[in-house]
Length: 436
Image 1 (cartoon, rainbow, N blue to C red):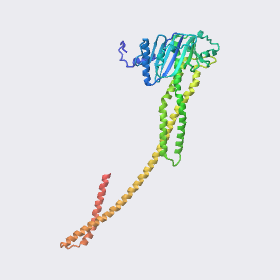
Image 2 (cartoon, rainbow, N blue to C red):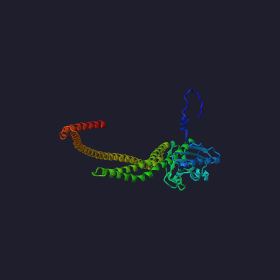
Image 3 (tube, helix red, strand yellow):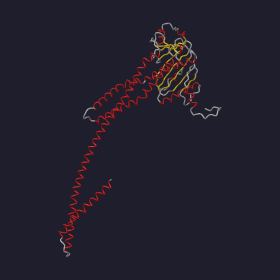
Image 4 (cartoon, rainbow, N blue to C red):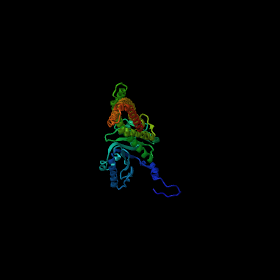
């Protein structure tokens, strides 16, 4: 984004303006009152996100509206009979539709009826949240703060009503947190002195509470499903560690079992870690949005925050407990594997020491035998050399020289032994120098 250079300061960081303007992203609508709103939250696969964007462009082209930019993740505009707010999140996308036509029944003509049916029927993804909300004045529905609130249940199919004063008493919000026969939940907002900016923020917070509440609960069925697996793995680890303390156990087989168990536990952790972490993050967002409502109790009914906390918190705690126990189980399996592996290593080391001692004894015996054979060899060599000397003396005697062959052979034996012994010692010394 080019800007005029007024002061001689260094050049801008490439992301400076994007980061600066992020605080203005996803701003709430400024709504004229009274207003009706319909909200859809859709879970999308990666390929469906591309289809969704093209489908939104199709709607804009149909009404001659400039479509969102290619890399935009949120978009707001006004069509002929309704306003649209679209946001694309990591796991889901949301559509908020607003209409300003009113009827006597707050939920008789929802804003979604203003949207083209053929376009609506081709939206990608799966609905995770669908809600209608209406902001009306107290006079429109005959609401009186001091009157019996049971009269409001007619707008919620006779179900018990939950609600409170919000935004510093500027409005009152009522709901039953139930899905009605049309497939939508309902929020009824009774306006006291809401400003247009407050109305947009209030509806956005109510819709976000509903979406984040359900998204947080996506981990709960997984936690309930994993609980038996957790107990089974815990019992299996106990069985293995108990067997480790017994004498004469098969450590190699136990180590194989531990390795298999460790792989199963790590598979559960890696498969579901994102879902459990997301559940905690969504729950924190719910708490923050409820806090932003600035609720004030209406005597006789639960506030939205109380109702959500009483039902949502145990589910989130269950998810956190299962996730934490799997992490602890992984650490325990790792510790047991390390202990057993150390035990196996010590056993192998002892076997190696025994094998080395046996090899050393065998080598010593071979050395003794070699020395004995070497001694015999010296005697044999002496005998053959002395015989050669005797034969040589006989040859000399045959030539006429007066010598005694037997005497010559006998005298040569000590000298031959000395020469052979010295030679053998020299050979051993040479070999020792080479092998050092």
